[in-house]
Length: 126
Ligand SMILES: Cc1cc2nc3c(=O)[nH]c(=O)nc-3n(C[C@H](O)[C@H](O)[C@H](O)COP(=O)(O)OP(=O)(O)OC[C@H]3O[C@@H](n4cnc5c(N)ncnc54)[C@H](O)[C@@H]3O)c2cc1C
Image 1 (tube, protein in one colour):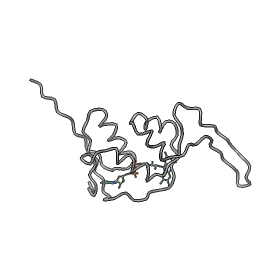
Image 2: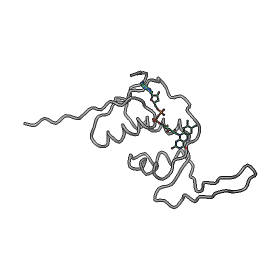
Image 3: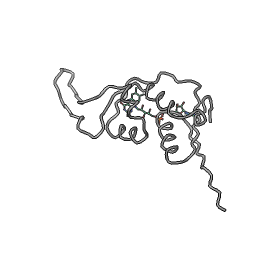
Image 4: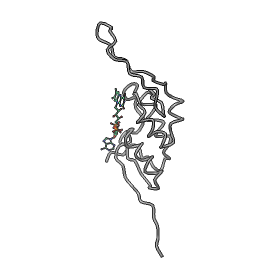
């Protein structure tokens, strides 16, 4: 008789990258465990812009609706010269999923909440 076991996968670092990867692995049937050296969430950075490629991944991970509740939509990217002259105005609201801006710490906290506690081990320097 063939015995099937769930493959455990260790990820070092519970930043946006590590946590998103863990969510994807969990959805693919693996058992990820993220080891994060910090004991608590610290305020990191400021607002991050998530373009449609990123929100598409968040949709696949099943977290886009939560992200949309905590973010603001971006419709255009504008660049200006030091004199205030508009150099570029790029319309980015025509994709299947929206581009948004969200505080980096809010995104990280949201991803952490989506992982159950047995998949996230804080205070573990690897
Ligand atoms: C101010 C700012 C603005 C940004 N704006 C944008 C933006 O607009 N759009 C965009 O797409 N990106 C933006 N970025 C970049 C984006 O935030 C990063 O690319 C992304 O957060 C990197 O995620 P990460 O998980 O790879 O790394 P990190 O977030 O650095 O996470 C690494 C984690 O690993 C942990 N760790 C490290 N070593 C160990 C160890 N030995 N043992 C255990 N844990 C460990 C750390 O504590 C940390 O939590 C911005 C970044 C900053 C700082």
